[in-house]
Length: 161
Image: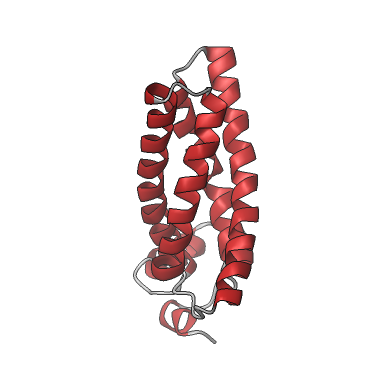
């Protein structure tokens, strides 16, 4: 049994009622290694990634006058690398810094993130083409929609123990 489980009790075994899940999650917010704590850390890293993404998106779209989809992909690539490093250090406290381990983890992280990119691009194109939303704001909306799939993929695939 991991120390996180010992400190806040076992994970609830049934989906309903929600109260045991809320109690388990609330206690877990303050325990390093607990899924709730990791999700909060993931969102903090993600917030920095959103800032990087928005800056690169704005720069390539407004300053370099690139198409909004190309700008979004460039923003994704820069923010993805930044998020990988921060998640490895801060969120999942992943051990092992050998080149082979880093390459494998980054390949899995990139694969997970590409699913998030597809979700992001679908939202981006839909908001820009159907609702005539500003591409920079539509890109941010797409990033927010893709957050949950990125967290689950990162936790269970990219940074698995």
